[in-house]
Image (cartoon, rainbow, N blue to C red):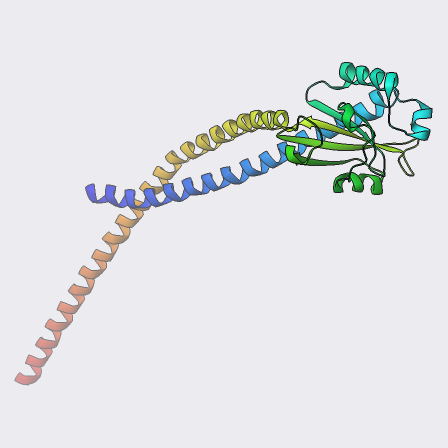
Length: 260
């Protein structure tokens, strides 16, 4: 009985360890895939939010004359638009808004010192002007213009066309909407923890539920191994009997031939 238990343990333990490794590998792969999907979904939601702000809220506040000449906003008009942006646009996670001209001129910024400055265009901003479509990129604070750079942010460049109903052609300006990436990361982390806990619980339940099946299989294999061992011993006994009988017959035949 003790020998059968040891034999069963030798069957159960390797299978259990192999199953555990397989479940861990599957869990890590699924968690990585889920985390990547969650980041993509949150970034897509942030891009949609930025497009809605630029194309719906801000677009109707800009006057046709301003879009036609696109000169840096100064004086009372700057203060008016600044008040509108502070009240209607700069709501978390949006923390910064800038309007660019294709030559790098800052038409509007919440930092008045930047208005009228001609700065070098970042590559995503150039790409947005070339493609006449929205482009998003994750940037560090050191790459951002302004007196209060953020640690990490998601910049979405949304093109603005002279005709709000016509999206083709060359955009007259580009609205840069900067969103706090820490908020996106916290939301992704919360969803990732929820999904991971559910996944771990499911895999643990599946792993534990395999043990009764594993023990039944191991007992069946142990019984089969015991029967095979008994059959092997029986065959050896039969073989020994045949050999002894053959040897006795050989000796008897030799004795008869000698007597004859």
